[in-house]
Length: 244
Image (cartoon, rainbow, N blue to C red; front, side, top):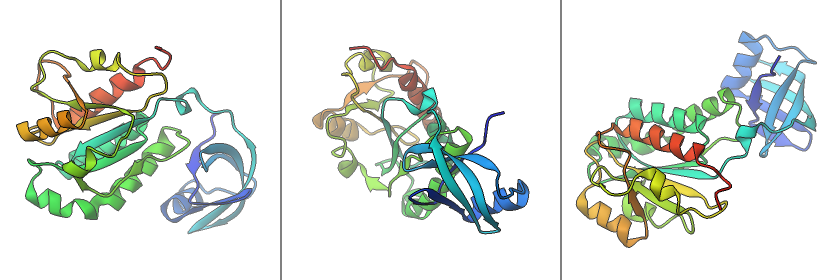
């Protein structure tokens, strides 16, 4: 039987701790007992954790040997630049992006981001981080993707260094995402940019181009932002890592 995996809230040497909601779920719903064993992700590793103390708000583990990493723990680094859109759909996108292995999500205030959503975006970051952590545990990841504070597009486009940077654009007619990925170098990170409802404006696409991003298409149909994000991440996650 596969052991349930938890991501530690605190780590000190060979001791790990779950706090808050995770501890309450483990103690009150799953009724964990001292001596039970779970997989515990801590500091990017997954180790066998034996429960040593159970309280409603805190469960402690003694960490043992490292558990063999699942194949899904070894994936190309993928980052997502995600323009802010309606929060319920954006949170769903964050959950699914986490399951698909994204390493970092940067919420972006774009020209067509609704003003109310833009002003409220910073207040939603902690909720998004909680969603990402829960999705990481459910999908048996060894880590939690970073969810950054929202930034303006002009700042965001310059943050990604040597990564292969691809902006998804419904106006792109010549180059598909699959074709764009053929330019990737061995072990090179990938950053995908997904626009808001209504898409990127022409001046935003020009900014991407000036900063070295390449445009790519997901096909002839117009996709919702959350659909585009998940479709693109699925394509990238399935792309071979040994193509060079």
